[in-house]
Image 1 (tube, rainbow, N blue to C red):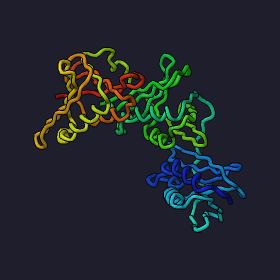
Image 2: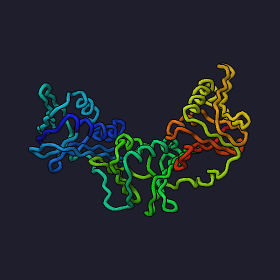
Image 3: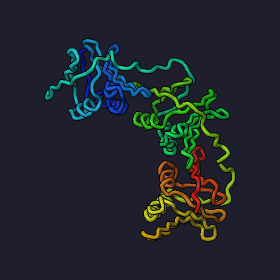
Image 4: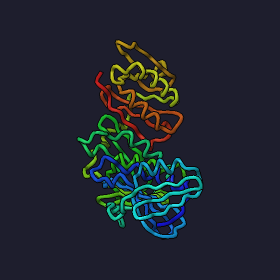
Length: 363
């Protein structure tokens, strides 16, 4: 193998791919990235057997070949080089890398020993702009669980209902749902939240389309020259639709920045009580307030003006409130709830395509 690539392209590809490689796997070669020539391009790839990321970059190929090299070393080394052309030459299992001012050799492992990268040829298909998908996934994935005891809660469910594609996640304490797009194709897949986080590192704020293909076992996300394939979670996502109230006894609409500020201030005093705060809506005073009470630290009440209907109070986890507020995109936020132990809803005031549900704490 003998080729030339630019430092910028190779560095970007390694940033997309290298994090998939892990030293914690029982197969040492999975700590490596695969480098191989494909026609006049170079394929940079990594897998942990559950997820695989492949990035193709343009290159000047003199001799074809393939090798695997330690992912972390390769990523750190290439990122430390100045911009410009990089020469790469393979001699047996030694990868020689040189620039105008650097000459290095990285010891590799034959690519023949590397696991076969998964492929999807046929399946359900849909696509949407990278920017829109990135925003939607950031809004949803925060609600996914980290507890492997219930695997179905550690993923993001993509499904269609009434010709609309949704993405939803929950850890049973909160739930986030996003309407993605109209879609007649019937889709129902459960994608690991860890794979969604890897996908978010690939997505950008461009209008470039992300093409998605899924079968019964895997799902492929393809953006330009980058492909991410992951195994699906086997299981049925909870039937959550009945959790979302259609009407609210108590509501408030206020600037998101103001609500975020009072939530943040009150949370500082709620550290002793695991973030527990009381949210109150007062229709006479036209305000929403957030109270925290902690015997050792003190107590705090913060309030802001709001458009309100009804009066009520509910006890919530302040971290969940701030997580939801951080991913809302409108200037004004709508909150609504009924009784103390019923779901609390946050969403954009002018856009109901995203809804965030927080289950109350017993006060």
